[in-house]
Image 1 (cartoon, rainbow, N blue to C red):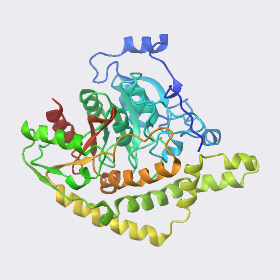
Image 2 (image 1 turned 45 degrees about the horizontal axis):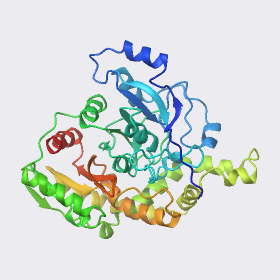
Image 3 (image 1 turned 120 degrees about the horizontal axis):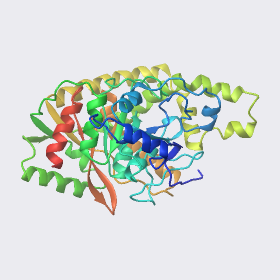
Image 4 (image 1 turned 90 degrees about the horizontal axis):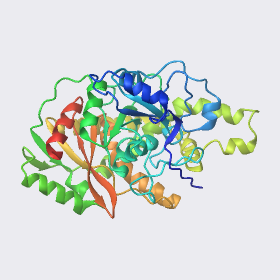
Length: 407
């Protein structure tokens, strides 16, 4: 694959330095919870009057300009956020690398020689580079959590279904969530107060640490040192270990099967019509998607109904087990297997890393649980960290617990 890199994470820009944005900022009610906070919006969310490319110029050319705005975007703007631009995303959000051969790959401002992570790459880079305060994105297979880790940000994937996903480009609906990235917990919490209508958070009675998963990651020493510090500071009510055998549970494999089948149900007809179209040359048909994205779409077509049934049953078994194990507890897991891959990493190396990554990100994804990434350490100068996972509806409790750890 040919790689492209750009510094600017935005596609459609309403710079905060422009007179229009300055006037908007000065007119915002200072009493609103998000007053004056700059909002970068992933280019999957529809905004009335602005094009949605979903990271792909052919998608853009074959879909009308939206006439309605996603309710999540409207809610943030209503509460004082200032829109500063739509951001680059991986094609149709079907990647975790943050690369886009059509519009460029946003440069990770912390480690420019490494990938920014996707598919909410533009929103993450906008926040990490100081161009926005809130990076609105989506998380299906890890698209908030992974770029949060790679860019040294806080990132929340909420409980599946608690935030509407209307007026946006879907990927795999039974996994799609609206999430966001920030530099600090205070801003993340303010955003949560607008988008989450959960009940007042209950305190967790126990901390479960997935020590076997932590032992497998590149930043194991750094994570163990942080956990030891928190234990010595008595930040945990009590703690114990939970073994999550991702290989035995087939977490990544199960997730990929179900996600792939849903993706083909969502986009298969459009993709087939493109290849039947006489408006595109053969060369254009072969260049609609990046090679790795194209290969994934081709694989999606091979998933059988028997594959889906087996994966659905496995998903249910795993979800039931995990929810029972963590009831009343907060679970600590690594967010990624390590730091962001190098920008020029070979494609086969990226593919192997993706499989390792999805074994971990699928834990919360399969069960529809909230997961909050905390940027608590670095390795070789690159950000990494860990995640807090809770039961369904414990989103606000995760934030409250994170505040006790990070204070």
